[in-house]
Image (cartoon, rainbow, N blue to C red):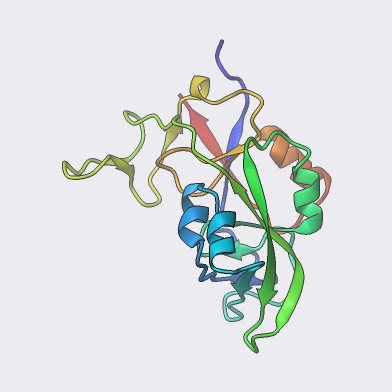
Amino acid sequence: MPNKTQYFAINYLKHNRVFCFVRPKLTCGGQLLVGKPARPVMKKGDVDVLDLQMVEDRGGLKLPDFVGNTSLLLALSKSCAEVLAQLDLGEHEVLPARLINKKKRVHSDGYVVMNPLGHIVCLDLKRSDMVNDPDEEPYLKPLGKYFLVGKSIPEKLDLFRASGVGGFICSERFVQTVEKHKFTNFAFTPVQLS
């Protein structure tokens, strides 16, 4: 049976500049980027909380629910993360985070980084704008158009990474929850299914 759910990409390019923006430099950044557990790396490096460095020339000081960033992280206010955790997020970890200003002071410790683990293989390689390098696995062109194979996505899942696509894909229910609670600084782009 085909999946009839509408999906959206969380759009990292539409950042509201009144809200703070971060450029994280994290010891566990690689794990967070690809959906691997980051907590063991944090523990090994004796890191209890992720420090997210604010870039004040790219954003303001106002605290958003979704923090714009350069690393495709899902950096959320604690209150936002608590509400979203009621959805079907699959296997994930929630890591404590704080925003650090340019004076190296804690601007806010009311944040977490949500890290959905793994990827779903659902990218339609034939219809998407792919780079086909004979020495590498095919990958999506930067800012290229892509299609997801709807029947490959578990129907009840509200947030996931799609293999070959940077960032996160979310369900219509996820978007409705964000809108219902008026969570700030989120932008969504509809994803096409094939």
